[in-house]
Length: 230
Image 1 (cartoon, rainbow, N blue to C red):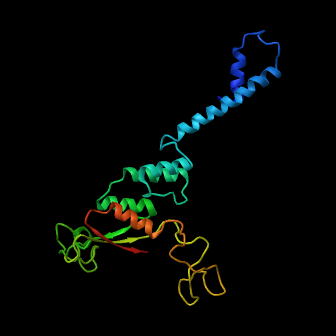
Image 2: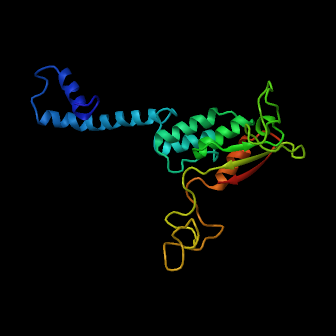
Image 3: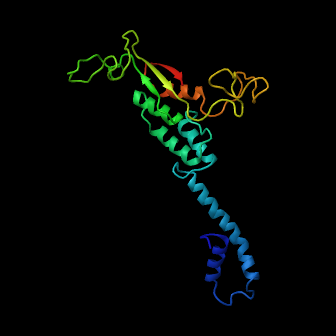
């Protein structure tokens, strides 16, 4: 018997009734008490349901979406995630570091599920530096170490490669393809499912706009971020 269920309430009420108070005995007496117990059990369940929705740790369903709306507005959307996954992403978003390179990378990673590749032409940690074999601070050079060409003419600029996580686009519609291409997709004349799209077409999953929005809200102030999707 579940605690505070209708049967549980009936049993508790019956156990407190002094003997010989009622002429009627089960089932008539219990049916009368059961009517009130049903309403009380429903109210008890509603109290528990309402209490759960007041905390991020326990909210679920549409109430979790409303909490997300209150905390971060349109900054983060569910995107088909289940309650536990969405709750974890929402908590990470509320507490995440912002306006730093680290915070921007963490935000994009949380959204897409993939860590972006970031390159700053002014950042020696990204570009590296030429060094001799006996150098104290590491080795960089042709075929040695890692890095990229820096450029002092590109101050406060970041180049980022982002790999989308969840599928994005139009559900159940393949992209245009040609059988002679090395990578083919199902869309084409006489083959696959395809359709013409326009600016007002509704997309699903993690869209480019969502990724751009996260970057703009977490990137260091005054920095330009160039994005390439891979």
